[in-house]
Image (cartoon, rainbow, N blue to C red; front, side, top):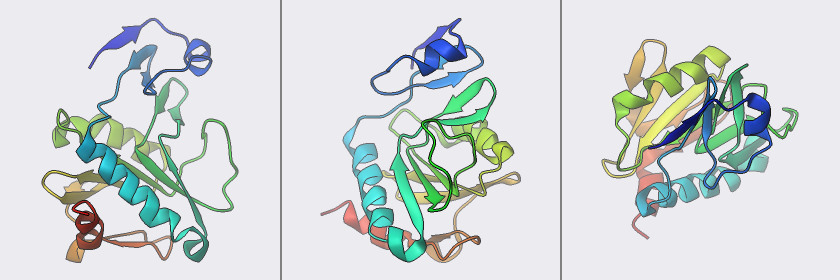
Length: 172
């Protein structure tokens, strides 16, 4: 991954990157995206949540900029927010869920900084999914754990994601 240092917040926010990039303390950082396993799982999750938006009173977005601190912007692969959360061009309020999908060059241990930023920002549910190993992790201040019973869930909502069903969609 490459990066460009010495960029102001204003310049970052007024520039379009393809694909979009994170911004960390004046540095624009590329994200690992774009290969089939990552894209396929991202699409399946967006469809999964999208089909349940009305029932769960949520909105689902892919690659939405989230300002996690004054000089840091992250772009979760998928984020879920409650339907009554105000819509902003760049989110300044924590979404209900931030989901990161591992790409071939990502390592679980390398996600720690990003996860810590989401949690410190107040995101109550941070999940990491690996399309290759077909595992998922619930991220908390005390570490990463595979979800009980293979189901990702949010205590603050009726959201329940049976991983076996989502991962089975990858084969179709």
